[in-house]
Length: 287
Image 1 (cartoon, rainbow, N blue to C red):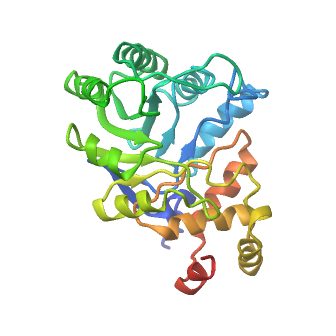
Image 2: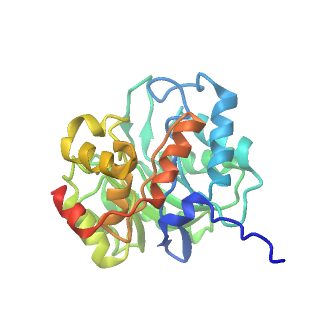
Image 3: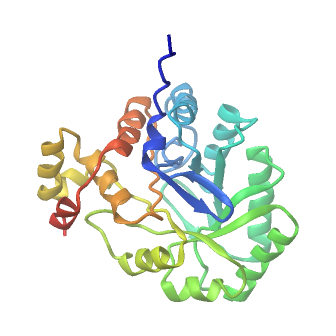
């Protein structure tokens, strides 16, 4: 009698994308929302936040996105507590380049000395000797780009980061950065109803750079802003949030959505979107 095959983990149905020489499932997890209100302080339900992180890995998620500024420091600390020592297939990406004066407040700081202090702190909190993906959270207009790009090169040469990505950038900025180092990922705001970064997505698609859309679900309100999305979701028997994620996955093979949540039930619903298939006609119908 043959044993019953083990069903695939849900996140693996999303397919894979490359981050340099690393390959991850195309549906990841964003760890901003496992912090407190205003992305400040500890989460309201700490045990649930830890369960979310562990459940994400159980579901086949192999990429977790975080940042020094989430909490600040809280998200990275919880990730290490829940998951270290990390499974060999898990890639942790973190970011530096912000100061956090208080809840809901974000101040860009791309000075090399600030970026180094943030990187060293991230390594300690994540309990890593090298961070697989380190993204510049913002290019600071008050600091020469060459200074910011140069210190990232230094971190890479020192063996403290493996790959480099950028966040909230234009095509021109990515092109300039690539003169200093390979850019393996770009993380811009993008979703089915907010496509201001369309040219950046298309650029990443052509160049084979992973595109990580943040705010993919409009904090769960995407179904309220697109009646066409809600109608399509109803036809598939899924939620508008799940359809919004399926649309992102259908948009480009380099798309790497990272929906975040602080609840296991929401996490499971998001990851289930990996199984939804959007036809070419359905994709076109959403504009």
